[in-house]
Length: 108
Image 1 (cartoon, rainbow, N blue to C red):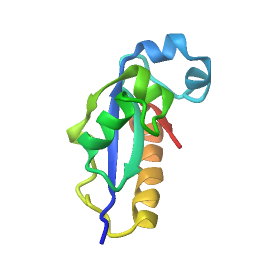
Image 2: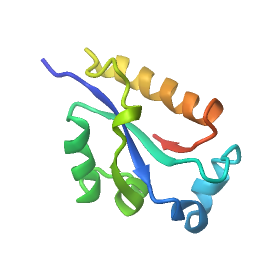
Image 3: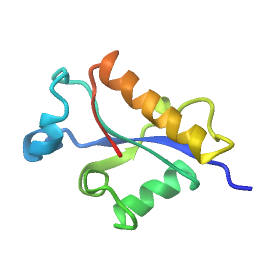
């Protein structure tokens, strides 16, 4: 039986300067706050991060700008019992980071 994880990858802040689509999707961003990618997977967060960096089913921002998995922002509920539960938490977490913390966030 698979378990599913929600994870947060810290992105190099140069993504805001170099990537128009990323910048335009994050008009709420407050200068100096983190830029992150939020995702979910049946793999543990560090394993999935390595896949991103190696270009395996990778998001381009996670691959090109990913620095590390942010442990502080991985939800305490990990792992989730179903993919649907992880997908729901992924969306909730991204919304929280965008709305409450004013971070720059990319999620699929």
